Length: 490
Image 1 (cartoon, rainbow, N blue to C red):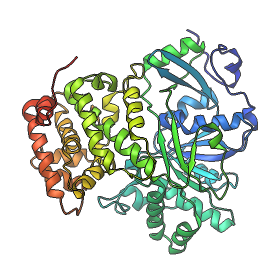
Image 2 (tube, rainbow, N blue to C red):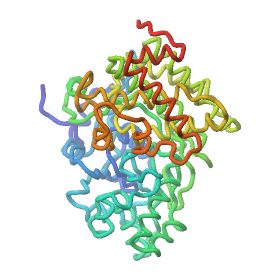
Image 3 (cartoon, one colour):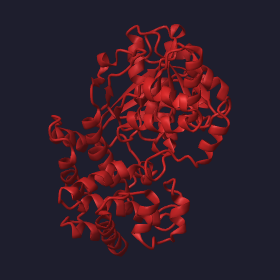
Image 4 (cartoon, rainbow, N blue to C red):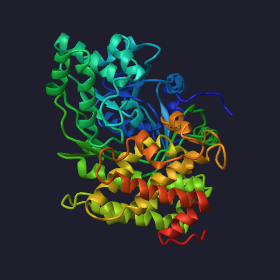
């Protein structure tokens, strides 16, 4: 196999079947800084921006920033920021080389360079996909001001480690220099993600400078957005296959599905690309779309992940093909749908039918262990919020609370029926301290802050505990049987 790498110089040698950037990459100006240059960003926002650049909007190139690891930079810098997006259906694959990432920075190596590009007047939008846990929220949802990285950033504003520190310092510098603030566009699965990040950043800024906090509170736009595309982890088998297709090596291609959705609150005082021309839905209120995605897609994804792991399934399509899991997901959706806004015109029937088709995509091989990561951070908005609303309406959340029980059981199974580090959670150390078999579900709820201060919290705990006991005694089949679901496998 050739050792040539994908790069600007090898683009013209690629097969005609591979879509490549049809614009002058050298003429792109950096208008967007993205924090968290992982696979999802490269399959989603970067592809939309690539479309805009191809349409002549040359001042919206992306500077990618990794807040932790240099891996993405090390893979893509020798490739001039280029990478292959492999769009895979059950019987087809389309290859596209994306060119929207102009350059890549690694924050721990050079925080000054990151602050410089954030302060650059050409930067008008900062987008984020840093995962839920990187927002450093305390159990009550506010900023965890005791987190070591937050403490560090408050003491060392010139050398930040967190997204909060970088955003606050850059906005402070822009304010001092008379430069218009950039718009901060959160693309993570947080409830009301724009408003949530706004509140967290104001809390952070208030700890260092009340004047800066006021400036961020009143003068910086934080539109909310909802993102959706399934992006499995890239494997060495994927790399080898893509290299054969391209005729050159790509150190980090990205696998994804044909479906892609982005709903964005249209609030960009400093300007934005014409995303709506390429399928982005620009709206006044993202909330209903966000709730539908979190509770129907993300909630069922977590259910499939934990129940799939406990049932011995490595991928979503295999787990979803199990009739019992499939029937359970239908029941989960039936519980979650009534908690969604009923006057927003949401097509929940069409949406869940689409989800079922996506989950059945055999080409993606989306690993259940990948989805299982960080459950304590994901379940509050994906599952617990729906359960609380069900209870408040007088309806039982039996299917919903089985997902929480399955998460606990899957955590307990690591090092036993599952590999030791099969998936991880920010609470792992404290969960382990509760014992190899969690002594009380209430202790887990306390650690994770589930349904904190809700009047019927004990009802949720009791439901979860009953499910957990069945899972421990007889696995998913016993838990399904209690819900009237058969356990026959294909």
